[in-house]
Length: 219
Image (tube, rainbow, N blue to C red; front, side, top):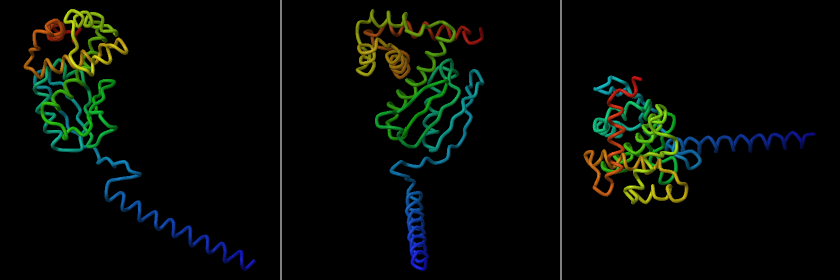
């Protein structure tokens, strides 16, 4: 019975030592903002961006002041009819996974490790993701169908691909959503003028913008 007591006491001491060591390791990892090899996100701050033309507010959650400043500057260059389609924009310090710069879903855009990109790339990323939400808004008002049928016709008339990224989606999945987002992004980045080889895409994008400017969202 005495041996059993000493054995139990030994195990308690060993287990307590393990807890103590794990506590030290966890403290070290937290101080370095890492848990199990995954960076710990800083808390999100909230900023309300007001569209000067429509007075609609966009909720921006951010972790980095530099990201917030850059995004606000870029938002002013995007047509308000596109900006107003997004309810929430979230800016994270770190990548969610390799080569994923942004995700758009349910009127929310999430951008990752935004500050690592140059200004031109930042503008393309945010315009691309906002274009996806804009496309969904056009579908909601039945101006664009789920298969991007009318837009696909414009692409076929141009008889080319706007990027290798969108080309992959068209060839492998017959999906024109990425071509649409890339085309809108390049249209906005190039001062609302695509090159002549994308003239049908440009005409389609401008037609959609005209419809929105005409009060589509008010119907």
